[in-house]
Image 1 (cartoon, rainbow, N blue to C red):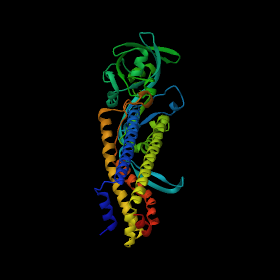
Image 2 (spheres, rainbow, N blue to C red):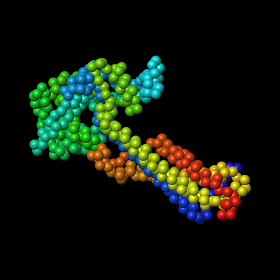
Image 3 (cartoon, rainbow, N blue to C red):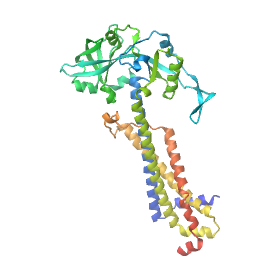
Image 4 (cartoon, one colour):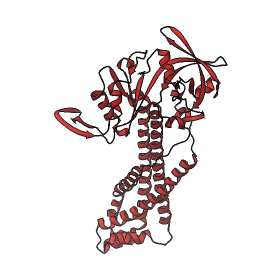
Length: 434
C-alpha cells in the first residue's frame, strides 16, 4: 500500500470542519480563476490573430506576382497572363524542397534537409491596381486606389465583408461600370448603393474620366486599408491603362496551407518564374501589421506567467498552513518511523488533489466564458483600433492540454520546496506542542 497517498486521500476527503478547509477552498478557487484567465487569454489571442490574418489574406491573397519593376516604380507595368508560368501555377501540388542545414545560424555546405509541403497552390486570380480620384454628387472627392478583379475572382471572403448591395459583375461580356467602396469611404463621400460618381484617372499627364455606379459597400474592419481601396472590373482599368485583355497588373496566389506559405513562395520565385517577374508574400508586403500581431504573443506570455505566479503563491501559502495545522500528525508519523520524504509526499499528494480540483473548475469556468463570448459576443472592441468589433474566440485543444499540463506540473514543482518545512519539525516538539 502507498501509505503517503492513502493518508493524503483521507485528509483531502475529510468531512471534519476546520480552518484549513476554508484555506483549501480558497486555494482551489484561486487556481480555478488563474487557469480560466489563461484559457480565455490564449483563446482570445489565438482567435484575434487568426481573424486578422484571414481578413488580410482573404482581401489580398497569400502571394503577389508582379513585374519586377513594380516593386520600385510607382507606374505599374503589366504582366502577360498568357505566359506559360501562369497556367502551370495552378498545377503546383505538394512540393519536395531541399534546404541547407543550419548549425548555430551558419549554413552547412553540401548538407541538405528534404522538406515536403502538406499542400500546394489552391487557386490563382488576376488583378490590377491604379490610383484615381472619386468625385461624388456632393462635390466631395477622395483619392483612392482602385483594385480591378476579373472573372476568376473568388468572392467568398468579400461577400462576408459586404454590408449593403452586391458584389461587382465581372461575368458580363461588356465592361462593367460597377464599383464597390468601403463603409469608411461611403461615409466620407456621403454615398450609398445606387449613387453615381465620376472617377478621374491620369495616364501620360492626361485625365481620363469614367462614370461608375456604387453597387456594394463592404467593411473588412481593416480601417487602414478600407479607406484606401475600392474594387471594380479589371477591364475598366485595362481600358484606362491601354492594356490588352491578356495584360494584368499581377497575380494573387492562394495556398492550401498557410504553414507552407514561405516554402511555396520560394518555390514559385526560384523554380517557376522568369527573371523579369517578382513574387512577394503578403507577410513581407504588409510586414508592420504582422509584426504587430506577433507582439500579441508577448502579451499572452506575460499574462500566462502572471497567472502561474498567482496560482503558485496561493498554493505555497495554503500548503504552509496545511503543514502547520498538521504538526501533531507529522510528529506522530515521525515517531512511528516515517521518513521526512514520506511525510513530505503526503502533503505533495494533498497539494496535487487541490491543484487538480482547481484545474477542473478552471476548465469549466474558462470554457464556459469562451462559449458565451463565441455565442453572444459579450466583449466588444473598437473596430478602428483592433480591426474587429467583437473579441474572437478560437479554442485550440492542443493549447488547452498544454496549459493544463503546464499548470499542474509547474505548480507542483514549486511546491516541493515548502514541504521542506516538514524536516524542521521534530517528533518531541511536535507532540509536546500538540
